[in-house]
Image 1 (cartoon, rainbow, N blue to C red):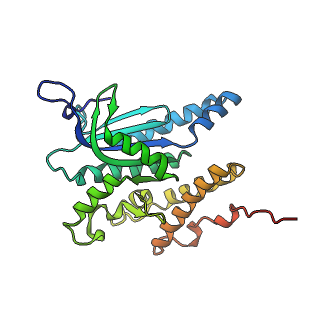
Image 2: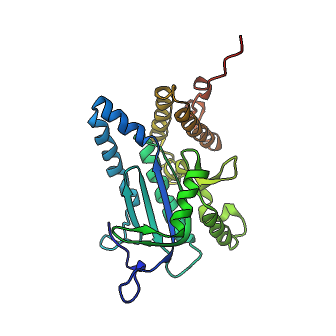
Image 3: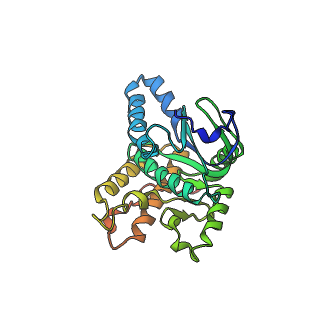
Length: 274
């Protein structure tokens, strides 16, 4: 990985830098590895590698091929991003950049059958080719573990506060650059609206990407069927199904009822006492 010089002082020594940090987890990775080892299905591992390889392009810095603005590190089922703040310290530009790219990455991975959960924070961090640490990473990993809960990329408290402060310059939230990237869930958590950032990314020029949304629907439905015996997995994909339907209902001018997922087919009611 490319090491950003922002994490070094004028003498080339490491230094902590205020940064946007994202921590992400590929859900079901351990179960996948156990399945591969049990059934000797090595092609499944190659499938995961191919999906990661194809979708990591969304996390690469197109403008700086020789020296990236941010650093991405991957290990087993996790990966982290460290994006040091530059001149402005409100983190708005860096947050919007990372959120937009993560949304595209999340969509691409799900369409390959892999769901992500993660969190984004703002705080001090240090990153090089071998080490990644700092308060921002601690906050992000804690939020991913204890607050994200579902296959969603949420904002930690620090990231939410930075965007709230930046939003004051615009008057209303729906006038901010991040208004079409974020949604607020029923538990109050702000999360990445990855369908908005992918299906409608070229809305004004070419219209919605209908086939991609149909693919998203099929992947979610297939996983709900295949993982019907696992309560934990079913709950995760039910959340994705609800999110999918909410997106369609918010944009009814484009998507009729055929795009919706019939969640009742996958809900399980408790057995009555006999």
